[in-house]
Length: 449
Ligand code: 5AD
Ligand code: SF4
Image 1 (cartoon, rainbow, N blue to C red):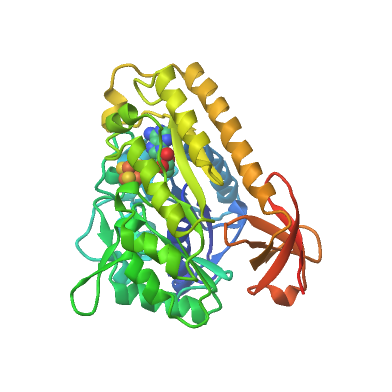
Image 2: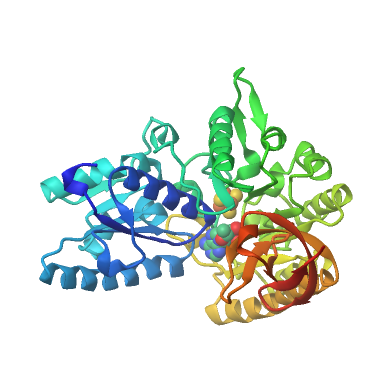
């Protein structure tokens, strides 16, 4: 620890997806190794990091309104003689670069996701020179090779990024531009990180990637390893009880991955497989590279392999050119498949993506109306799925304490939140829980003998 950074505090706020949650943890670890400690209070922070999301316009606007509040905090601290560095990381940093410091001069450092291993060094540089820095290159060196190797275990469940970027270029999506081309980490690196996490007490790993099932990491022999093969390999780690992965693309849902769902007991029966729309015409305009019929057939195959699998999807309503008939097809698809969980959005035109320039943009009022109808259906399906597990006894991995004393909260194999009265020493352990009731966001039950 250098005198310069001694006892400095960092506040990190994470927007957006689980990949950002993972990245924030890695940035925090790099900063802690550099002498920082974490704080939950902006007012106490010598360094504020916003790890941002660019996927929809609303997400971007949230970042700018936060920066306004941070500017006020920085001014208050300045009056007390304290300095505050402000960093914008993540996909807004990557997409907007120098535009951020123009719009929000409070920002000292703009850093894209491929440069996180350089965060402490760039902060020092900015502090020493008083200059604003914008670092959004896609460097040749591999950030994962340079990030702080020690992982801090925060709970019995952990995220592990194994793949980044996307080459699919769905016409609505910024990811190929903000996260770059598809890249898979090497198997040995993934396994090393997984083992370290499990030694630290992690029992469940969620493997992350924008296109996680396109994973094709190199192995020791220089050969390529599929996601299914990686899962089977990680499943051999003693102490690791559960494996999940997200987010997948229908095109990469290969037979070996489907077979792993039938054969590998540590692979949890839950699959997030976004379909986006039920209209093949709209799917083509979205450049999704699959039709609704292909999605139906794929789901049949997956359910044949693992009949109890809980399915989850992302949906977009009001994509340019979406007619009432297209939207009815979306509702039909949802009715026929039945999702246990879902995320649905109004189409949000993103600068630089092809769909933003398409004709026939759908009026916002119509998007809202469609979203309401779709979400009504999806929420009902989720309720029905949860109600269907009442009366069952399911293994629950307890991950945290509940709001009320004596209650622990964990997850079922189907990723449902489950609350149960449990002794604190059951944190990090799996116990059978008899499910007694279901509320809007979670189930409750009692630990079975
Ligand atoms: N507008 C609305 N939703 C979007 N998504 C991605 N881009 C957009 C956009 N421009 C949604 C997709 C994706 C999820 C992460 O976010 O459904 O699967
Ligand atoms: Fe975006 Fe499509 Fe790639 Fe998913 S598959 S990250 S939606 S471009």
